[in-house]
Length: 191
Length: 191
DNA sequence: CATATTTTGTACCTCCAGGTCAAGAAAAGG
DNA sequence: CCTTTTCTTGACCTGGAGGTACAAAATATG
Image (cartoon, rainbow over all chains, first blue to last red; front, side):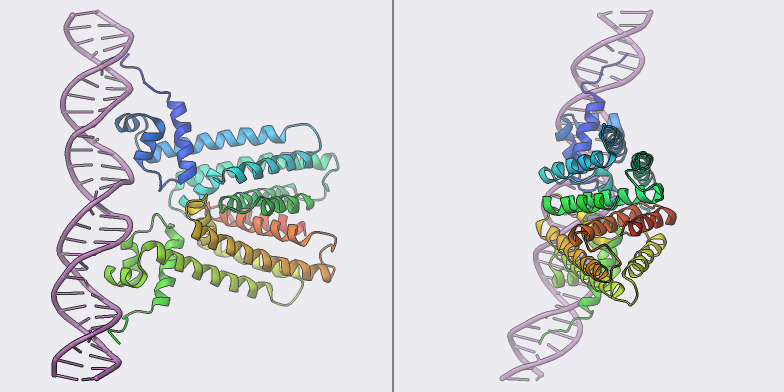
């Protein structure tokens, strides 16, 4: 019973995600959120409790969306290296158009360093998922002979992960498409 | 003429650098700076103009220090790969003890995305310097046969750079020494 | 030593972040 | 249709961010 919500909380989290992604946690004000979500401040705090709580929801939503997207991109048919290249080149194009970088990377930089254990936990969880997805692809490529089976898949996937994170940092800093593509080339040459 | 300064502006910039490095730009307050520098607020604003101007000085100072440090680490004798490994392992140890990550990376994430062109310029400049240092090392290794001379040194050094940036992101997020070392292993295996 | 010039410390100011609250609106149950 | 419950709005509140103003202090110059 009671009055039904005038907005979709799930959609609101996505809207909030967008703002936090662009501006970061600290630089996002309640006012920004009120405008972006199109609801009153009271509703906002009634529904989500605090800016920080809403941020956590938004970050988790981002993580889940990204993880699903990566798994889908890596699951397409064809040689593993080609899939990987397509995924990375897609990322480059997206970031050239809109250099928001990766919300998890941005969050790690802003709230990492021991200042926010819960958020850091979510961040590391996303890293673990991504690493696992790469590891699966690497092992598949090793079975098919595309990648030398003698290499340690853990080390290789960790390296891919860190290079991916670095790519997002470069993108966020406004590096050119050429610079970003060179990273992709350099990475794929090593596999 | 006039009253002489009661503090060393250069040392003050270094103190400020320390605070900005730990807390980030947005989360650092004038009060934090007053305490860290040990001077009054009036002196602070008289000497540096604004929080943002002081931050730019601190960031440039960081960039110069780091660039010098990297060049020194990479300039030691012995095989290039060993130098690289020593440099990266040193970085890992430092970050395990104090996970502040890299101030430039943190800044890229916080103020990138087109929000602060001057700062982004400094950030990209640091990336360019780092890439150049790696490129020099790569080319040296190619001449000595340590790295396949057929590889594009631009792509290789870009890849090393991005992996390094990713490493700092991982460190800032509080990843374990083992995870970080795996990145180093994965990276060096590919060279 | 008087004066012009620069630095210093502190009080003060304005604005807005982050959040609370009271009063009303919209549903379900009796 | 009256009560109970939940949601909504917008006014309101507190603290602190970021910076300015001003008077006092310290120095070089004539």
